[in-house]
Image 1: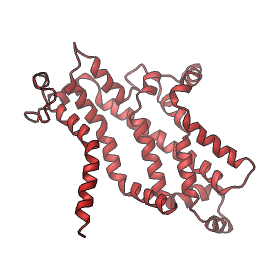
Image 2 (image 1 turned 90 degrees about the vertical axis):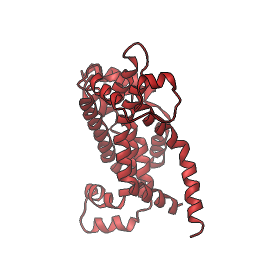
Image 3 (image 1 turned 45 degrees about the horizontal axis):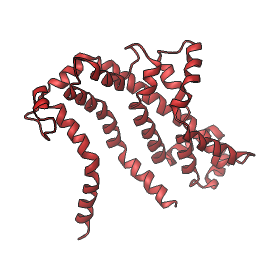
Image 4 (image 1 turned 30 degrees about the horizontal axis):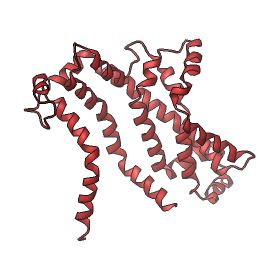
Length: 271
């Protein structure tokens, strides 16, 4: 008990370097342009001015961009889980020649950024006339090496006797993968989904390459375009756009933090 408060204070101190930039962004979003010109580094605004947020909604269709970003991130995350489950199952619970090599190739693909392979992928999608569509934003990321790795590692802790018992009861492989295993792997599945969602929610490069129309543009693109409007960068408006961009990801993290803690505790216990 006596050590609890010092420990908590220490954790708060470690969190401050991560929280201060976000707090400064929120503070700047409530400032006016004259305030920024007079004192750009002032920690607090003179009041809760919402003009910057109103300017964001006037400058771009926030609702449409938000819907596009949500649909894209959700679709990618769910597809990655649906495909990573059987892949992780095969790499952890099935015996076949070349399993170690296959797992090594999956891990090796983590070293290849999307920017390296975007030219052939873009060319292929352009040939089938899928550019400027939601399919082009989702399909190239349907398979996740990171998701496969995380689920494979989580499956190593599942007793093989449990899977054998399910087979003896007449369960097929797909039943085992999609009905038996998800409840057992819930923390790891939530963690993999959250990693995917946050990454693609904030992705700027791929939507910039694949879209030219407002109907499929995403919120990060819209926020980036705020810098190009007017005669100079209106940082209070840019910060207001970034606050709106970050809120859904923060809300999702708040809703899933318990599962993330369970996933981290399970990995620590398995070491």
